[in-house]
Image 1 (cartoon, one colour):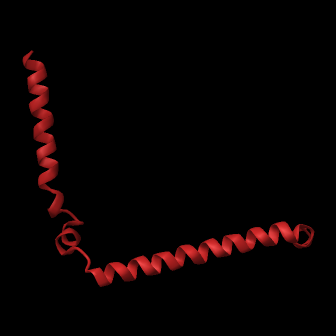
Image 2 (cartoon, one colour; image 1 turned 135 degrees about the horizontal axis):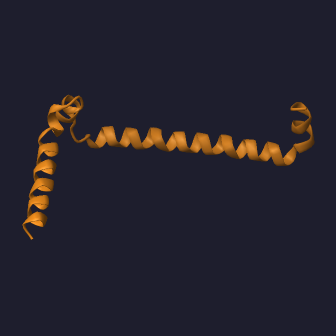
Image 3 (cartoon, helix red, strand yellow; image 1 turned 180 degrees about the horizontal axis):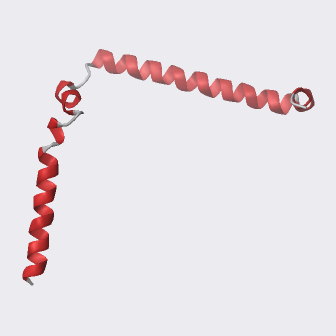
Length: 79
């Protein structure tokens, strides 16, 4: 029974050692500088991300239309 307890304590000790080093490694400075964005920053990020999604979706749809509307013309280009 004590073997199970010793293994549990050892696992707990290793876990605590790992969590102590979270803010001290190479990413520690980034984590210390991180902050919650303001409402204005968040709105800008959402707007830019949404526009990017729409642009990439429109480009994909345009390519799909070209491939279905002009398959022989496009197929001839790659021969």
